[in-house]
Amino acid sequence: MDGVQEHPTFSTEDEQALLDMIERWLEKDVRPVVKKYDHADEWPEDIVAQMAEFGLFGATVSQEYGGLGLPAATYAKIVMKISAVWMSITGIFNSHLMLCLAIEKFGTEQQKRTWLPRLASGELRGGLALTEPDAGTDLQALRMTAKRTNEGYVINGTKTWISNGIHGSVFATLVKTDPEAQPRHKGMSLIIADKREGFTVGRKLEKLGYKSIDSAELVFDNYKLPFDQLIGEEEGNGFYQATGGLELGRINVASRGVGIAEGALELALHYATMRKTFGKPIAEHQAIQLKLAEMATRAQAARLLTLDAAEKFDRGQRVDMEAGMAKYFASEAALENSIEGMRIHGGYGYSKEYDIERLYRDAPLTCIGEGTNEMQRIIIARQLVKRSES
Image 1: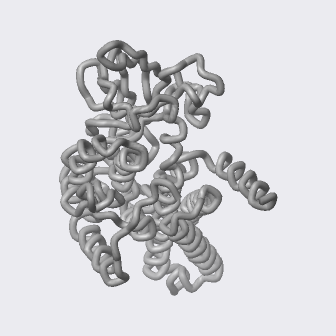
Image 2 (image 1 turned 90 degrees about the vertical axis):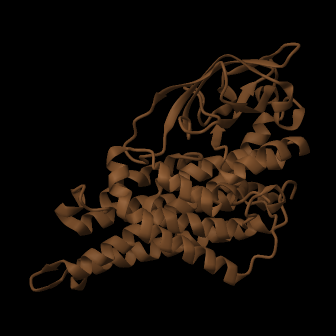
Image 3 (image 1 turned 180 degrees about the horizontal axis):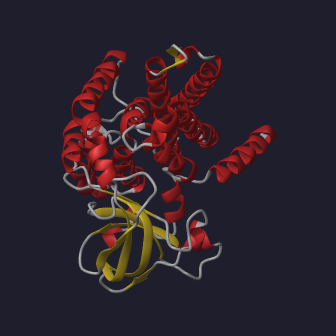
């Protein structure tokens, strides 16, 4: 498959050592401070610095350009493990890696060597800027324009719900270079937009959950950009380039769903074995046992679907249907398990003193982000029909 990188030999032992390191970090440095950051909706600067030190901002970037070059399956397991403790921080490096993927998959060699080493090290951080106030699922409706001049492009418009918008410094941004093109997607291009004059951050968007990662509006007002920051240096390919990373993006969101589903199960199981009613732990009551069994089955099914999609992605196979299935099922599993986990906690589940309430607030995002679950089902059905005809 075009654009799929060859991964270096990455043994089971290497993967386990990396996952063990992440586990130790989560228990030592992340779990003790999650409530503080989440409740204050505060940017976790020290945690971000640690993630950069671990190389997570270059997790899927080829080693040739300074990244770790991890297979998608290993990356998915990392996201699952972190999301079981705190899903928000996976968004900080995942949105960034979508930017990296766009440059590595579609950029020129000069663009790769200019941008990827600094992105992989975490020196530069950023994300993907696609959504506009009136263009989300329907990306072809976007209005941001990039007009050609003798020196480069002049860009005007607004992006919204952009992860890392405040603390990030560079974004793969979808613009219209030919507003009159038919079909509409032929007039769209993807550019590397770094913060400079004409590029300002609008308001920070307040959210129900997914705290501590900044979601913001980005405003472009006569923003000037040289031609060499057009990804691939050929106009009209932006829609294809922007959606070219969605398979990996959906595997990532599926992995977040798995993490939340497993995290909710872990919290519920711990509480159910400690909390006693009528003289015995509530885990011994059949009503609670039924909930725990369903939660465990959902979480395991979500994990297997997600790893199946990731492993096929690593083999270079087309996985739009499989990634859609994983994203759809795992996100719904996250939502169901967080609700059931809260119910098992009883009144304490509604208290901000217990971690289950955070998972309950974070889970709905996974059903919306990287394409709503309604869209996933349409994609799955269309692919079923296409594959049955071939």
